[in-house]
Image (cartoon, rainbow, N blue to C red; front, side, top):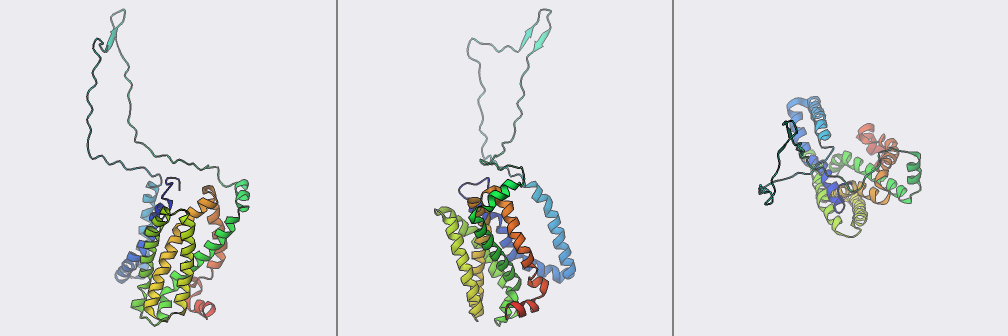
Length: 292
């Protein structure tokens, strides 16, 4: 948020594009690992990869610009004006030469400094009280609380939902891939378009949330697997944009300094609801209680 002024949505979407790309390569890699090393071995390898990725994240914590030098531009030697001689040393009264002190200039690589800075004082009572009086806070918390729960629940149950539509397990497994393709478009293409439109962030976010609701209703009442897969890809595209534009909307309406507090408020409401996730209760109990 600090390093981009015009293309904030595009930069944020590119940052989260790897999540959508993992939906394309993840199922294939996990299937190969499970077939070769078994399920416990596959989990062990995934944990090792995640652990070794931590140093890379630490290295890219402070971003620096890349300088690509294609041509070397030579500089002509400076010549002294006529009539002037550069005195390199002076002789003292006793005849001892005194060398001039030549300043040494060490080149330092330029570091990009953001135009806006955020205080590092931490969370205070004043900052929390100032955020609680903003009406947009409650709208954003409610919207993203419902959106996050829907997004997680859909990703957990989409394969079983596809099998309920009459698809085979091999075909239902590709539903996550279709959703990942939609998310990739929603995180790369749609944010760039929203940056080009005046007030496009809020407009595209509202349209994407409406598209997600239409896709969920369509998947519920539709019995065709082809239409179900198409609506699933549409849901992924809409949710991909809604997820990546979250920080931009919070920065615009609440301020960048309130972004951690916003995530804390959403997590405070989302944690007890997540205990009813099908991964915890079991899919059979979840479908019996919530879907019947």
